[in-house]
Length: 116
Image (tube, rainbow, N blue to C red; front, side, top):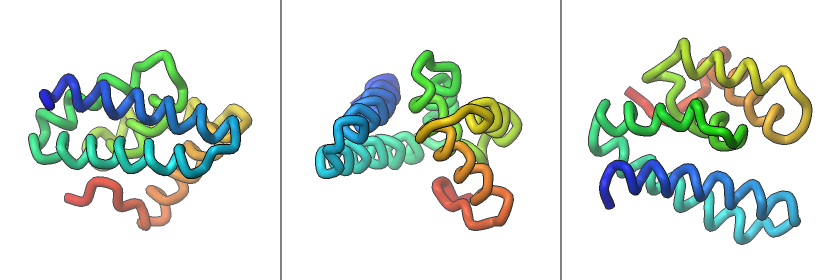
């Protein structure tokens, strides 16, 4: 897969996982989670170029995709990622909860999605 295809895979799988969660299908949701994690790992293998490509998703129209990409990019793009997460965390619902959790894990030092 190209970097652009990996970014598309990441975003589409995050969105698909959200839809699975909404309809109560945790097994299918977990399958999509594994796919976007694999896409991120492949993007990481491209170094900062892969992270830069993923950063585009922090401006995606889908809030779940914005939150997940920001969550994965906190170390690399802290200022932008925190801004995205803080904006979504101020809302209500599952996506807001995810954003709040990412910010809390970052603040308490237990965040480890993209270690240095």
